[in-house]
Amino acid sequence: MFINKIDNLLIEIDGSEIPILDGSIQEFNEKLTNNIMEINKIATSFSIQNYIKIEDYEVFPAQSLEIYCLVGNNILYWKEGNPLFPAKTYGYIQDYPILQQLNLGNGSDPFNTLILSKNKPINNPFLLNYHKIIDFLGDIYTTNIPYISGIFFLNNPNHTKNNKIAIKIMEIYERREKVC
Image 1 (tube, rainbow, N blue to C red):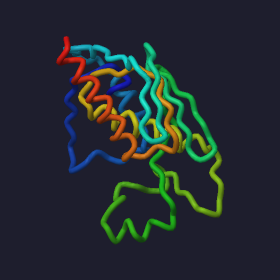
Image 2: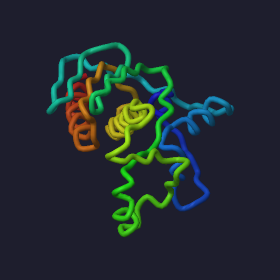
Image 3: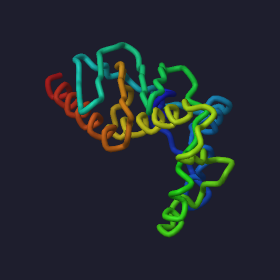
């Protein structure tokens, strides 16, 4: 919901977990834009004011949200308002037996998961970038800061690095709140 600037939304699920869908936010976004909703509050913004570097992530001040995402040798530029799909959950076929043993990945199937093989290239390598941007937005949203603007350079993103940058942003935001 971060990219829709909605910061207070209740979604009720009829089941034990959210279905894996296709690993993207497309279906949720379509539901939000194609249905009438009562919106109590539109998120306010927090703009990054100074350069931040955490490991191989860099953040620059900006008045909008922009992301450059490098995965392998492919870099994808995304700006708020642009679609974040197609994006699929993905994994290597070689890891599937391990996931089964751990009782993980139960919602995945060949239709909603991009199945990778170390010996076969994928048709659209940017699918991985889209998925990593969605992961990043989800991890950044855990700061509970309604809307963050800045230019983010993500180098082979993962949840660990995403969470480190989220913690840094939260620290900056909390310092700002104490001064105001």
